[in-house]
Structure formats: structure tokens, C-alpha cells
Image 1 (cartoon, rainbow, N blue to C red):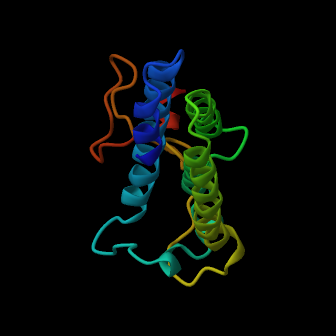
Image 2: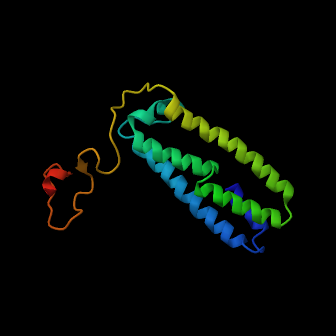
Image 3: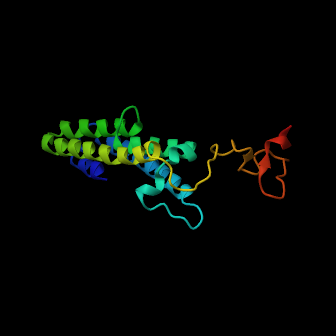
Length: 169
């Protein structure tokens, strides 16, 4: 949110409102995506509230971990993500406003945030799994079941509430 406050200094500059709106939308989408994946990984009574709880999840939950990694990389502002574009646009507007010292502080804080976000990504993929989470295949339907019961009109899901691919054939 500090980046949005920085753009308040340059809101009257050309491109200031666009930079603020673009970064807000990108930041909100990536934040909701990251917290949504974290919430989906914390099913049942088990809360994943420590970094160690995510060890090896890149191998046991590959699709969720990939989406979480994409969100974290975008929040960090690494290219070629939308978070990078948003931060570059904000830096451009702040520099045009003549706030060089503020832009330098923001760049230093971005480097620090890259370290912190990459620490989480390293835990996802480069640490052995310690939890007993069973491996899954993926997303909304690659485990053999479609998790959206009424995708096609006239198709009734089985009593379990899950729609199987074999019902389509």
C-alpha cells in the first residue's frame, strides 16, 4: 500500500491516476489470489500459519503451489508479471514528480520484499515435504471429477455432488 501512497504525491502528474488504479487492481488481484490459495491449502482443522507448513508443497500440491508462486512473484514485482509493470509505472510517475529520494527508498524496499517473497517460494519447492498431505493432481477437474456440478444444462450430478467425466461420454 505504500506504493499507492507514493502516487498521491504525483496524482496531478500525467499518468498518475492510471498508475494508481493499475497498481491497485493488480495488487488486489494478486493479494486475493495468494490468500485464496493459502485458505484452500488450510482445509479442515489444520492451519498453515508457519512457513514450515508449506515445505514441499510444490510437489504434493503442484497446481496450487504454482498459482501461489505466480502471485508471490507478482507481489514482489519481478518481471514479466503484472506487479512488475505496476511498480515500474508508479516509479515513472514518482520520478516525474521529482521525488527521487522517495523512489530510491521504494526501490530498496522492493529488493527487500523480493528476498522475503522468494524465501516462501524456496520453501515451497526446495525443502522436503514434512506434512502428511496426500498428493493431488490439480485444479478444478484434473482429479477425475468436475467440482462445478451443473456446468452443462440437463446434466445431473451423482448423489455425491461431484460430476464425473464418464457421465459425459
